[in-house]
Image (cartoon, rainbow, N blue to C red; front, top):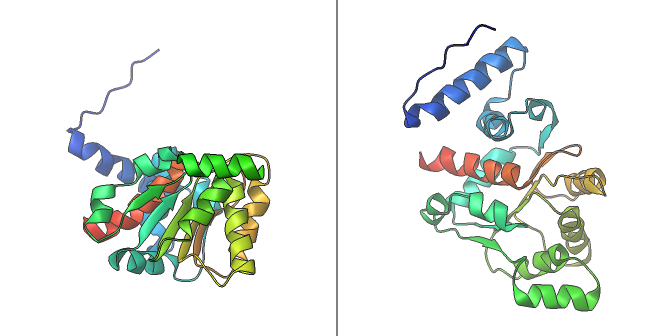
Length: 213
């Protein structure tokens, strides 16, 4: 078997080359991304190496510009996993006055979830709703978090500023995504079963890098 030639790049050039390959392959597939959404979708593909996201990522009207404006004004980000929290570029977020939170491991959240017989994701969303500033919710794991957000929208005089809904899995994942897209809040959602904490963080970072790089 013929040995393929290895491409040599400096570390700072690898990401640039990766995005060039993504652009080339999208062109080859005849996929044209909307300009506003292009860098978000490409960063998700970069993170996952999965071009299906070019078809399944859904954006509410002017979603990217709305999210960027929220970040400019110092919005916080709340994630549903510590993995997603770890992946968010907190330095870029802090440069605009924002902070990233994940309440899933908080002792009071675990205690209340056990007492009520519900998930920590549900209680985490309730705790996050008490933050007294605009919040972007980045949900990459728990469909129950999306369902809880929808319940709070319907039953309280409250709305999240923005929802990134990309939980991964099989149980209630697809319906939770469809429900949040009908909740009347701006969103970026991936239809279907795919997603994950890495995807949630990638979307956050795509928005942040548009503003800080």
